[in-house]
Amino acid sequence: MELTSKQVTVNKSAEALCDFLADVKNFEQLMPENISKFEVIREDAFIFALKGMPEIALEVKEIQKPNKIVLGAMSDKIPFTLTGNITPVSETTSTIELLFSGEFNAMMAMMIKGPIKTFLGTLTDNLQKL
Image 1 (cartoon, rainbow, N blue to C red):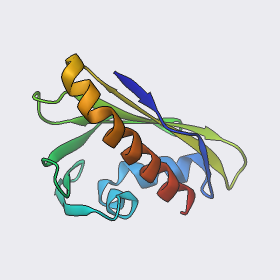
Image 2 (image 1 turned 90 degrees about the vertical axis):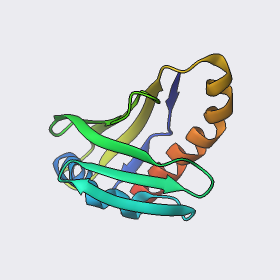
Image 3 (image 1 turned 60 degrees about the horizontal axis):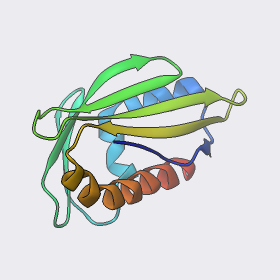
């Protein structure tokens, strides 16, 4: 299953945005309001939970500065990646589009598609506000 967010413009250079996303503690300010837990567990990993959902641990898997950052689930139970594709626009602005990619059975995909799409929308809306 692959879901793509809308592309948004961020008032940061591509390099600054990539650095911002590479620092996992910054994800706390991008999370939805219904977050019930956020904890940095390593320099490159964090755990978060939304109300009514299980905890998810994410770690930085790959950085191709300044154009791409890939976060991935630390658990094999729900294998997925979240990729930020960054495009420079000017010295002070860039665009980003998020791509969620995971392998789920049809029932699981149907259950999580809506919440994941909403989550991606919230992340991009909050990135746009930076």
